[in-house]
Length: 115
Image (cartoon, rainbow, N blue to C red; front, side):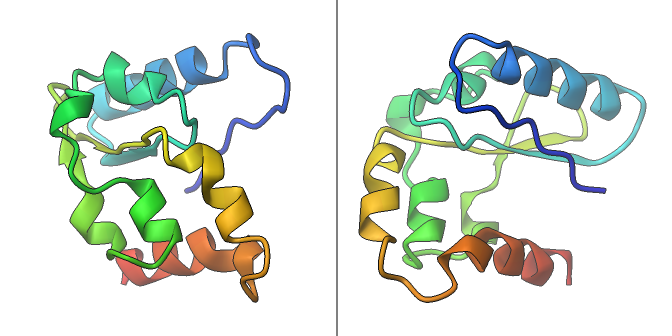
């Protein structure tokens, strides 16, 4: 199951909802992978991942510099893993503007990860 919380408007509790929903589902025993797609990387911070220690992020995946599996970080919540965001994500839309099939990059990477 893939669930997305999307809104262009800020301050609508998307990150708070995503982190809490992911944690709840993980605590019920489901394996959960939360992908932080916000350049402010608040979900990454909320889950205790020290942003200065993040070497590879979702930005690297979208720009085809790393595999999705290289970006998965364990969190303190059992069964909940995270693919962190970083500030570079803010410019990835510009860098990907001319990339063919850019709207399917993440979908295809997730399909490969699921195997």
